Image (cartoon, rainbow, N blue to C red; front, top):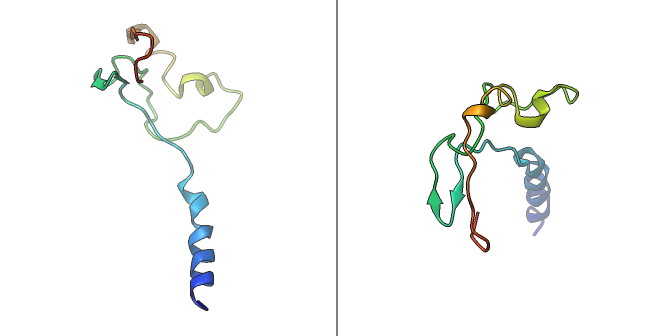
Length: 82
């Protein structure tokens, strides 16, 4: 028990390092994958966050606004799982 509490404290210190940051490349509607970048805007900086919160890139990430016209709109039926 003497080593359990310090080990738990060390483990807890690393929990913040796994904060939520993910890049979605596809959409799943009703259990069906719609394909990469069909219904998701493609960005040009991959998995890097936008650091300038006053930039237009904060909306759809770097390059996301320019890829918008090629992105399709998904139709989702009421009650579907997304």
